[in-house]
Image 1 (cartoon, rainbow, N blue to C red):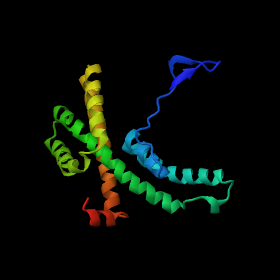
Image 2 (spheres, one colour):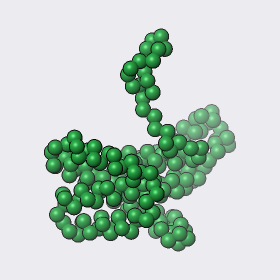
Image 3 (cartoon, rainbow, N blue to C red):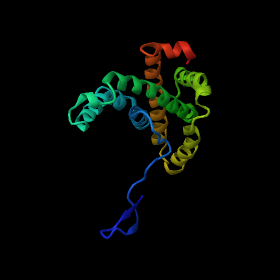
Image 4 (cartoon, rainbow, N blue to C red):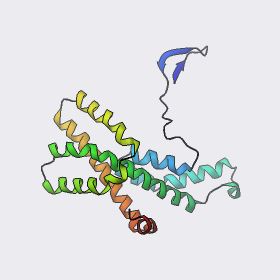
Length: 189
């Protein structure tokens, strides 16, 4: 979106970049999961999950002037919707791991850590092949390579992405072994 001047005329300055590619009519928890999984590391995401859904629910109540009977969801429904959306978004981030694994090889010497990432990538790769994020990452990772000369910074990018993927996988596994075990049993995820 281009900036406007005081007369409302379009300027040559970018005012905002809006990402519409995942916009759809659906659960607001899909948006929250998208943001938290793809934009936050495991630490920040896990902390935000302790209050974000409740805060959203409080804001909904406020939007309906405190009339809780008009709120279209219960807090339990929102939490369940978030968990479903989280699982789909966690698969996105796991797909990104395929692009970080080659970088791990170059920067991590511990063979057991490399083996764990390769095993995770192998086990979950079939779930992520069709996801758009894989194609998108081909453009970002080489971009990082081209502009960063410090090998320790490159290594930090790769390790950060791998850790983010690992945390997403851990939490997805926790959900599938716990309150969403019915999905694991039904679909063998």
